[in-house]
Length: 89
Image (cartoon, rainbow, N blue to C red; front, side, top):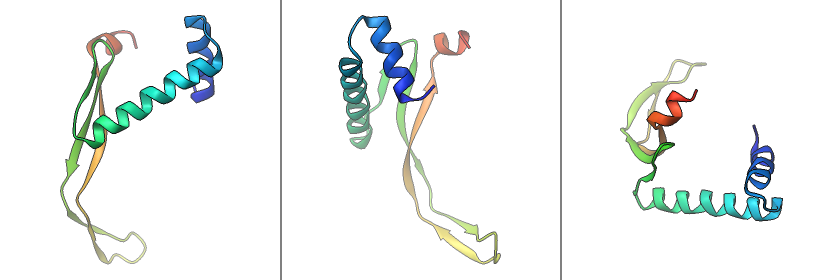
């Protein structure tokens, strides 16, 4: 399912237009991104939790040359599915 499929499904399930569903989805994604940038968690009971995890700096290897490279530390977004979502799969 891609974004336009999801928007269509949201619109039909909620009885709203696709434009309204797209606006709602865009609002959700931007609010989630802003919360994660601030280091907050976004918890949707029954669905799952979006959070930020930190990866430490490490040494890797260039697969073509075998030379060592330094990989910088960074923050990454993470999702953990809730119990109800896992049970329904």
